[in-house]
Structure formats: structure tokens, C-alpha cells
View 1 (tube, helix red, strand yellow):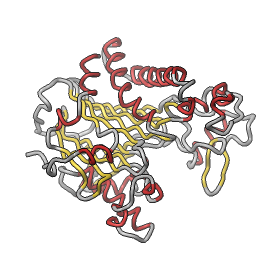
View 2 (cartoon, helix red, strand yellow; view 1 turned 180 degrees about the horizontal axis):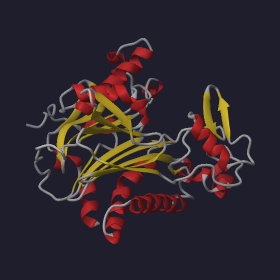
View 3 (cartoon, rainbow, N blue to C red; view 1 turned 90 degrees about the vertical axis):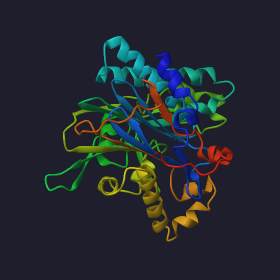
View 4 (cartoon, rainbow, N blue to C red; view 1 turned 30 degrees about the vertical axis):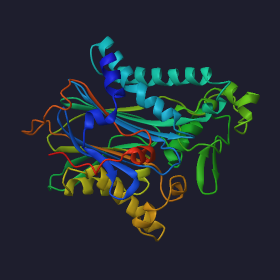
Length: 381
């Protein structure tokens, strides 16, 4: 466990060297061109829109699997940053205890992360009671030699790209969106609260649980899971009171397992900032038709171009908008593309000369790029 934890905490530059960099004139964009994992390559890109980056993303390569995490925070960055440091170590711990990766291991890791965040909220209550209103979506992928596990809370999404019988790209969604914008999710939430006719409210064109939150599952958001917190006068100094009898959202992940097949080519893991702009099919087509190096950045830029088009401006105009104000044009976006080379004659080189290698995107893109006084970073040879 300590090996995984120290690997994930290691400063980014010590592992990546000069593989990543800022986004070609966009001071709020960071990317990693390409890097090997245990059975292929991967690419990461992140663009910041909020005053503090609320997205976090990471890839862990181990001897038995490649793990991918995308954590999309809301209400602040604290929950997503917490998950970024705790989920992978919990998976490693439970997998060792139970003799390997399984659905039960993943469920236990999610539950342990949720419980630890609850304890953090309790410890911080007197000094920072508003942390009870902070939460994060949580998307996990675990890719073994012949299978993939995808676990999800919230509306980040995993999409697989495969080659169809006609040679064209086919998009296959591997995660479930837990967002009450979807009718089936509204029905699910309503069925859990038959005594509350206003459990989901439509206001100003958006469906929200209790008029507050769109996602029905998350890490954190303690005040929507533990009514005592929302009733506390200290908390009500910072957040409007919410009359709750019981929890209105959960931390129970949806988990899918799927055998990998010869025509499976790659997977895209991304926060909802990407999917608000691009369809599953459009994203898969971009990856299918373009070179690997810098592919995650290409997806982010496609999303930003679409966001600009909707506002009848150019991406160059968006690049000049400061963090915070930029949130009016698009969300934080994290994209991780994982290529699946298990079934091909491809032998990826070892990464960072270590059995365990954890790559995390910067905690805050604005701060990272502002501190980076080196020359532009070059793609790997």
C-alpha cells in the first residue's frame, strides 16, 4: 500500500520529465502528450474554467492492472482532491486482502473513501463547516489483461471505442450517468422517496434534487446525506438550510465489468465538461482518426471549439478569458485516453522504471502554468 501511496504523491515532474506542458497559448490548459502503461499508451489533458480547478485525474500502472481516475468536484475542490489521494490506495489495500481485483474490492474502496471524507468533515467542522457542502463525482476504470471494470458516481463518463464489422469506429458507453436531467434517474430517485413529491424539482430549465444538485450519487455532499449537518446553526451561517428527513443522494457506485475483445481499441474517461460539448460518437471518431500523441488535448480543444461556436465566438476568444469568468462558457474538463494493445504485437516500454507508476494531472492548472518558467515541453521520442 505504501508503494502505491508514495508513487501517487510523487511530484508530477519527477515522473513525467518533459512529457507534458501547457496548452499552446491557453494558460488554463495542461496536457500529457503520450506515455506508456502496462498494455498500451495513454494521454491526459485538463482545462480549467473555475477559479480553483475542481477536476482531478490520475493514471496508476501496476503489475496487474492499469487504473484510471477522473474526479469532478462541485462546491469547491476539496472533495475531488481528497479522492485523488485516497481511492487508489484503498483499492490496492483491499485487492491485497482479497487476493485480487473484484467488484467487491471496488465497492469497499469507494465506501472507505466516502467514510474517510465524512471523518474529515467532522474533524473540520468548527473551523470549516462549509466543507459539508462539497462533493465530487467519481469515475474509476481498472484494466486488466483481459477485462475492464468501470465504477461511477455522478455524471463523468467512460466510453470505449472499437472497430466495427465494416472497419468504422463504434462508440460503446461503459458507465451510467447519475444525473436527474435523465428521466430514468428521476424515476429512480422518486422511487426511493415515495413520501416526497418534490424530491426532484424543475427550476429555470434544470432538474435538481431538492432544487439543489443534479447528480444523484457522489463522494461527499455530506449535508445531503446526513440531515444533522444541514440542521446545525453553524452550517446554516454559510449554506441555506435544507429540510431533510433522510439522505437524498448516495455513494453507491454503478459498476460494470466487461471482457476485452480483439476489436476494442481505446477508452475515453472524461468529466462531464467534455460530454456537454461532444457526443460519445464524435469523441470516439476523433480518437479513431488521429495520431495518438496529444490525443487527449485534441479532444479538449474540440470541446472548447464547440463551446465557442455555441456562443458565436472563437476558441481564441475563450483563451483570453480568465479563470472563474471562463466558467460561464464551459466547465472544467479532464480527459484521459487509454489505448488497449493487449491483443496486438505491441510491447510498451516500462514507465518511470518502477512496478508502480502514478501520474496525476496538476492540482490547479493556472498555478502550475504560472510557476512553469521552463521552455515549452516537448512530446516524447
